[in-house]
Image (cartoon, rainbow, N blue to C red; front, side):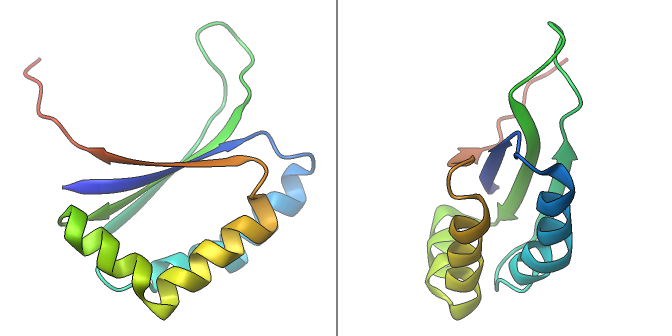
Length: 103
């Protein structure tokens, strides 16, 4: 499983960010072909107290190829364009692979 991870720093206006993120951006992203799952985590702090981070979104795909194909679709392009418009200065995008670790 491969995931595209969006990490958002604290927005200047949290209410405005949340309004756009949940009512505009999330529905756009959920339409991307090949997206298997999407998990959003609101960051509430760190072990040291305050944090610069606000939100984490993990978008799951079957493979690197599936992710690449998804980003080429009209829906993928629309989601990418939207995130750059409303959060381009506070978002970092990374690609990861889940690794099994025995506990």
